[in-house]
Length: 396
Ligand SMILES: *[C@@H]1O[C@H](CO)[C@@H](O)[C@H](O)[C@H]1NC(C)=O
Ligand SMILES: *[C@@H]1O[C@H](CO)[C@@H](O)[C@H](O)[C@H]1NC(C)=O
Ligand SMILES: *[C@@H]1O[C@H](CO)[C@@H](O)[C@H](O)[C@H]1NC(C)=O
Ligand SMILES: *[C@@H]1O[C@H](CO)[C@@H](O)[C@H](O)[C@H]1NC(C)=O
Ligand SMILES: *[C@@H]1O[C@H](CO)[C@@H](O)[C@H](O)[C@H]1NC(C)=O
Image (cartoon, rainbow, N blue to C red; front, side, top):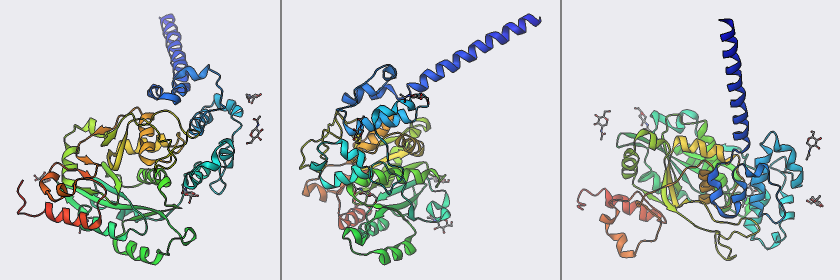
């Protein structure tokens, strides 16, 4: 009788030890295999890296940092980071000069990309302005509309508040709109808008303002600061629309689309206008220019254009993933990189329009029937569209 128990214990111990070994091996080779599908950065993926010694010279900076951050987090391999001859600055106040020294062509980078590299180690920027906890998402808000705006765009924010971004009930869902801002101080040659902004904040209580410079190449930062903020706020929110301040959204079709999924699929939702097989633009005159010394290979599938719809669950996981991934200067692509890390695929929906409509097409309101979102609209366009689509005489 006793012997049987001893045998059982021995057997259980063996199973336990085997589990620990399997767990350790899996943890060490944690990066999902999906990364391997991506061109040059492929060799970082999978467990092969454990046994391969690689030449770090000649790696693009982003790939090098990815590998470095991965090693730093690994309790066993952390020790091997010495070969990188790299230290991330300890504070946000310091610039990442080491990165710039590694890039032989750093001086030929456009100035905004230089600024990006010098501050890409930092994500800790304090929130300067934000609604009180009970004001951020009142009445059990379920859809949170987060609009990336810039300080000076008062008219765009007001157009959204008056039209599609109205807080309240849409299809039985409580919607709340918040605006995401960075700093544009007089030091950067901007007019001083503090007093106006204070008035706007007091009147609407829908502004979030972080202490970083609000530029195009800091939009990735804005996204992850928002996703980080969301983790501590608005527990009732199930869906998030994250978009620019020049988009028009039909919240009713957006909710209908989200409602067409079962609960499990909806939890993994990340949708918009999906772009596949894109590659970095190496033409230095282009807005999205990315030098070869910074990043090589193709981009993962990502959502382009003015906005995305995602579930709270995905938003949380994206924020977690971003902590392990070096920032990327183009915000849409950075979210795509984070999705790939999570082995999630963005969902395409033709209702997200990111192309320019013909002038005559714009007048035909029936063309907007299936619309979820359209970008590059002026505040006047937005108000005109809203009025037109709510006109009881409209028959399509
Ligand atoms: C790893 O750590 C051990 C002890 O802390 C040290 O002796 C060894 O030199 C380190 N190896 C590398 C490659 O830094
Ligand atoms: C490490 O990098 C510094 C500059 O960042 C350079 O001066 C030094 O020679 C490098 N050391 C090695 C061993 O490569
Ligand atoms: C929340 O509910 C209160 C009372 O029901 C109402 O007065 C208020 O307008 C609602 N707020 C929003 C944003 O819907
Ligand atoms: C909204 O909710 C109420 C009660 O919760 C329900 O009676 C009504 O049918 C719902 N309307 C729609 C359009 O779902
Ligand atoms: C982003 O913001 C930080 C903090 O204000 C700033 O140091 C950096 O230069 C900005 N980056 C870009 C690309 O403008």
